[in-house]
Length: 153
Length: 179
Image 1 (cartoon, rainbow over the protein chains, first blue to last red):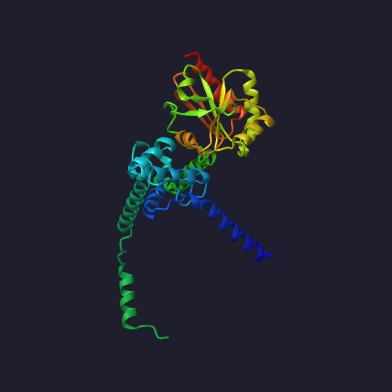
Image 2 (tube, one colour; image 1 turned 90 degrees about the vertical axis):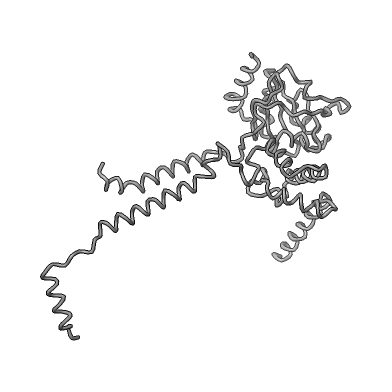
């Protein structure tokens, strides 16, 4: 029964694929350029997927938009700008560096620098405070004795 | 505070700050992406009217009044949730609601309105979703508040709740109508 259901599920996913297929263009070069741009764009319906990977309705529509714009001769930058104008910077998988995103871009490096600084300071302080202790006279005599007559087991 | 007590409590302090950030993060809704269209003019459109498909409405026809643009579809489950709120709002005549019937089939849309009530002054047909893309629509229902100059002043993502209406949308409509 389980096997049957699994087979059914696999078959139905084939049908889903088939439904999407008519949207793909016949020109493989165009398709490759479209996918390259779609990889840069976040699908806002399923936020952790690119438009290239997503099968959401909106992602399919946007892929079509990219195809149309490419055939109209628009550049990748023009197409990405078109998306940002409508959906905001969030649509880009690589957000641009600007005042509102400075923390996002530089935050991790700042934290890393602070951590490295703390590590260096700590190691230095420890080196200073843990001086090798000098031996007292009694300890030196005892050590000499031990070296001269090692204890027999 | 001497330096040993400071050192002892430093990890706890960092932990509390982190918990603070995470707590705020939990209250945010990741689906509410701020729209870049706020305070920008409504994109140009010219769309057929659902009830009279041979007539059209264009963006510039709407200048001079404050109105709501509600993006809806008969296949949209969350639209069912907000629909009674819109029907009630329409009865009060405070602000005209125009529908954008997004990626829908007109017979299904008409039947849906007949079933659940029609709060819309008009619904516009956006069958291929192109105006939806121009509006940056990604999660139906969405509602835009448009001012007299045709500028988008607010966008509600997801169903319009009675709270959102009372606390945000209607005060804004009142303010925009007065200006």
